[in-house]
Length: 216
Length: 371
Ligand SMILES: [Zn+2]
Image 1 (cartoon, each protein chain N blue to C red):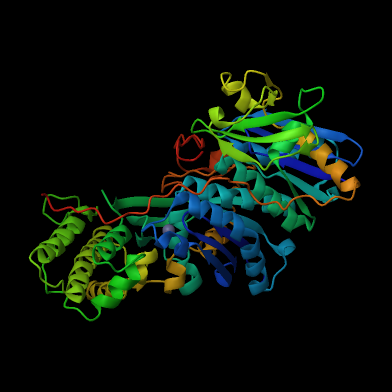
Image 2 (spheres, rainbow over the protein chains, first blue to last red):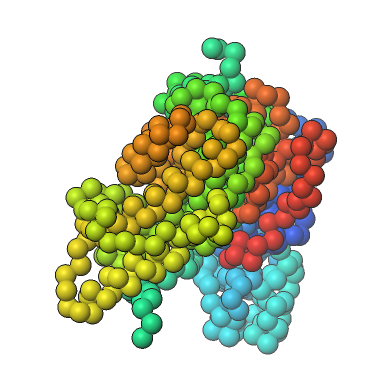
């Protein structure tokens, strides 16, 4: 097995290769505005680091968000196209699950929160690092019922008033997604479809009427 | 000819997901998925709606194009993609797909200019472009007059709209007349039964001291809307057919007059018209009439090649391959305001054969890009 994992749902452009046993190469760069430029060269780099050719890849794993849409789509479009060109399956994983998997929390329940912009966070609730117990949601920090639990991710660090027990990591790492996917696939579990979790409708104003131009 | 370059082109600059395949100047496939219906109720293209639709449509559209062309992806000589100008987020979906496809197949990638592609597509219809060619590009997103002596390296702007694109004016007037979106086809239809001389609407920027090749449609738009509102305020019926015909006449009169004048001034004996508005029947007829009178050969591709499509991108990509132009780098980015003079985005190691010393920074640092 050789999984190529990537995620662009947070400011990190992150790529990893996993051979079914462990992560054999990885790259993460934080640049929220250059997902499109950085992703493919990063794939090229991790393959070179592992001395492997692209045609050795047996499956793609992609973080499906939630995350800011423009960046998120770069990862999904790249994953879909690799699937097409290589004829390998494309597996989706919730980006928040990748953060939970690498959470700096010893045990017990916690939350994951990432920056959703517009003063909101994408978040979900976890029983432990492998078990999500709520659907991913987008809300204002003050409206998230934290219940004194630790909160993992950049969304937590951004809003200390709402999330006093903030933990790392800030951004998801593809190596975490790859390890989680390898675990689940080895256990015979189906992963999610590689479709984006937008959680918000597109911003669009329906014009009520055309703008009257005759001066009153 | 089998030794002509086989190129797949991807276009996502607006609301059409286009994937075309050409061999040299021969069209093999032109697959399109449009999200236009999803935009209709908004009265205009909603960028986020378009971007979401591109992501969903891309892989099926590539598969459809390959099936239509009856070729295998491994036989392609290159992948071309619209790098700009266009809607930033929408462009980025196509660029991401094209880069990955080219990389995975081990083929060169060509990030090309959307406007140059609109010109180059005529090669699929009428054979190699004469050099030089004058091009009038008119659509919902652009209205420009361009002169090209080599479509892969030299496109010079002669004039452009100073306010709205011609297609935008059609959309706006259709909305004022409650005819729906998009406005171009429906105005054309009503205008056929109307009198183009019924109402005398203004011809923008046609005064003796106005720029000879620039366009303005904002004043016309306002004048037509005012005329309609005055009728409605007086409780009178609006003669929709005559308004449509008279408005359309004002637009195409200015477009063709300036295009023919530019040809004459520059001594160019070929005019090509492209872009969505080139599907307008009155524009085609009047351009034909005026070109004939001026001894200019008119080239207008069939309507499906005039609107945004992947075949036009493939056509320019094939020309890039044929002329040995430099491929793009793997970190190619979408550039929503790519200048028309940048016919393509060659890789940095090849910038020495880039004919312009345009110091362009390929940053996608647009506030509207990241939602
Ligand atoms: Zn166009």
